[in-house]
Image (cartoon, rainbow over the protein chains, first blue to last red):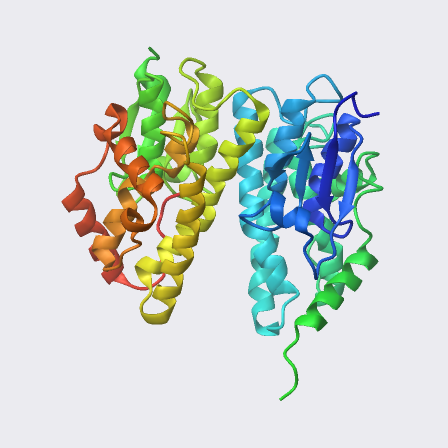
Length: 231
Length: 227
């Protein structure tokens, strides 16, 4: 139940993986909220008013005050509901810096690579795939180093970096289907493959992440509506 | 004061991202050893401490490397608790982080294009930059600094614009016209540069303009080796 006097809304979309980040965080903390779904082809007045700079989802509105940018929202959730649920960020400053670094790294690398992998230029796919696989190798090594033998980057439970990566990894299977290539190869990145299974099976995650089929359908819909008309 | 051997900063004199970290260290009164890097011939230490991006700045604390200047700023604030640079309130912290990533991702992108490109693309980048400056200008309404009466995390994050935007304009021959159009931002630039910790920790202007001028001549959209 939401605390008395608290009003929590999230503007987002069920097939947006960036929206899934605050949704997982709110679920972890046991915070109830109104999920206000945006249509991808038409932005609501509330969204434009709450996020005039980027005009993008997700936006958390807590007691009428907006918070924008998915991982900034996750951190806000962690810092606001401190007595509810597990801590999302680790407590040690160095571990926190590592979580932030790898989040920034993934946010920098993965969206653009995934766009190329599902994009209209097949010639660009092999190099993008190589870069993607190389990034996975780095994450595999980071997981081995930082989780101290536990499953998640956050340790026994999911945390900040798990949530950040989960949203990119949610696209992996859909991208593999759309592009007809393999990206996450269990034999090459065994720890990451195991992490993936556990993350997507986690109670705070499994009902939130869109299914691969939904993402494939969504990507196809967006792509065809942006296709240049035939000359 | 922390013993200098415990805190090391790998940097490069002209880099705004490196200065950002130095400003934070100095605001907190943290002693550190500074190691100047020749980015055309990176040291084995830099490559060892930052094998992924191979960039400056890298802060090494008790042998542990931290990279990405905004990540370093948060680490510094969480490790040395005197003179906090981030606010206490979660909503204010979220706004501070919002503006920091806005300037680092969006403003830097358009500034880079305005710097390196020519013709229509340059004009478009300047236009976009002005839209961004307007947002920053509005954010400063009624405030001396982004962080309030004193400089803080957001000012340190936006700080590169106070000095390096002008340097870029001079080196690449363009004008973003903030003095005419964005009075709050223009005033903030002057106030920020007048702060003792900042004014005593800037690279020499002429030398920096010259550096960026030759950097531009080296070629088109080469990625600057710093973050």
